[in-house]
Length: 364
Image 1 (cartoon, rainbow, N blue to C red):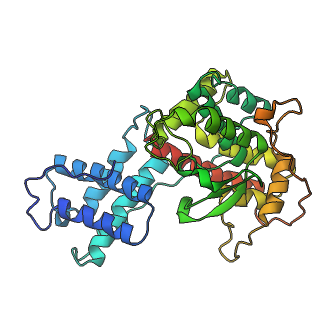
Image 2 (cartoon, rainbow, N blue to C red):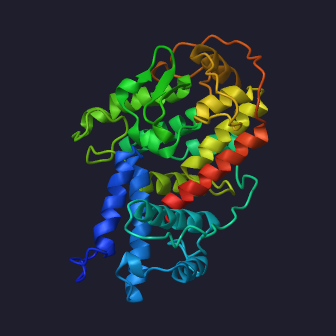
Image 3 (cartoon, helix red, strand yellow):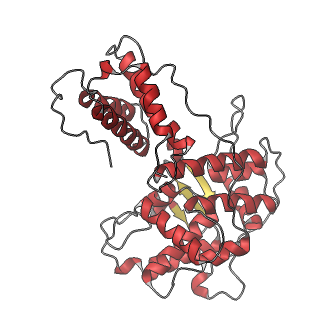
């Protein structure tokens, strides 16, 4: 939830935290930061303000560099809601919010100096991906929802979309019916990460399950939101934590000895398409990544060619004997021969960094 300061007896104090945290968050909104980013920073600052209050610190002018170093050590010894030690990424995100807050206070001349200016952030580990599904394992997970039930049909459609497109969890939540082009097999991602728009292909099998969901499930939902594609039982936009828990449950139920949530399918999609010969540049556009080199400008590839590459290299396809209810028109196939700038390892490293962010979003 958005930052909500506790009732504070010193709120009338012009130097109290309660007066400046909302102002900082408002400044982020004015700079067009994503609502989710503002919310996370607010939550991180709430934890810091509460830590300070427990030690009798209620004014921003009372915070010193040694106190911030103590808070950093506190985070190092903290545990997440999962019961595991707070990851380096989790520590970094909380400290980054604090650093940004004190930079704001200094720039606004509330403070004469920035006590957080020399606060070093934890060094993040460069890890190889922990778990990636094989094509066979992905099919086992996708087969777990009970498609004899309305919720099973919806969940199967969600899994198919995640696997086919590799879109982020929030992009799935924000997906609207009008963003889908069933005829061309293309989906528009509006205001994705970094508030960027992009067009990506979606497979005929995923579209077929979406069509089944729209035909068999949506008419029976009392819709509070008529535009959003995937809704909960009350007709509201899906909760991100609930989606992640559901995906994890399906992975566990499948018997696949791997861990993961929504991001598992994003990573799997990219890896399997690379293994099947897709050019790295096409994968980048699907994922919504910019080129890693800051000296080059990203050149967008043709969405039609990207669709052809997706059809050729993504393993999820409708079988020839599929029922008409789950079949669409076949897509034209073609080769992709563009040169790639980044390496597959670069893209997989960026995906792993995103997985860390997803863990942070869930408080793990």
